[in-house]
Length: 321
Ligand code: ATP
Ligand code: MG
Image 1: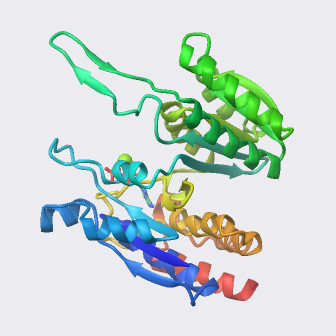
Image 2: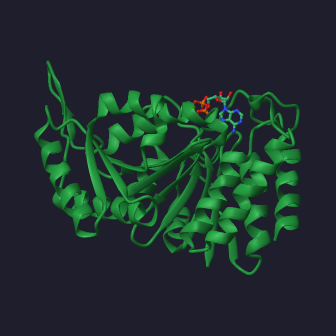
């Protein structure tokens, strides 16, 4: 397997280092390389995503991404959006779990309101919410097959009472779920956001369109105690990219106190993706043990640094294997 690591900006390199160490415990034999991209790279070279980096990402089987700063400079184009499009990473997965609940949010990652089809006129601006049959079917299939391996329930987050494009999206999701015998319910996205926060135990897999999934998953982060804890995966037909939900956190960069758990959980997702469920479980169990021992970074109320938490997780993994 070819693993390409993109540490990125801010706390990215700090949290990615222990994550890579964790992966190397399980797979020292895989081929690892690093690429430079993002804001720091742009300041240094004038290009946030060079052609060489693009080719390296295209050749990777697995990509591990730290975090990148996206400055408000209009001349700067978001690197992660470009990568998602180029590698056609159509499914954005965000698992959220805790005591008594275990939800997988599956967000369509390439179209909807982020279609990029938009323009400005003199007195108005327009963005097209594009929902295609192909785009909907592949995300519906993906989400349904996740549900089949879990508790066989799929919730379709939508606004079909208002949006024709969501009548279409819901119909296709239902068709795909029925094909593989997954039960379905439909919920309007506004009510769904509230219900997920109040009754997270009611949900298994939730599938939804691009921007609804973005908002829903950020809101759901509330259930798990903050940004430093949540991993995500971007999956396509030929590529997979894993990244923490948090950004580059410039306010704490270089201080050695960033929480590395979101990044280490990315390894658990990566191992699951590589069909190594037992190894994925070991990573999560090690994290749970370290948290239970009170080895936590300041965002969780602890006194430990990034290194200390990373080393504690690694020690547990070695003990548990
Ligand atoms: P960006 O523009 O890259 O998204 P940001 O300033 O929005 O940067 P985020 O990384 O999105 O910062 O996070 C918001 C805040 O949450 C940070 O300022 C930081 O204090 C906190 N935070 C985020 N990630 C972590 C982490 N891994 N460990 C500790 N605190 C974190
Ligand atoms: Mg941010």
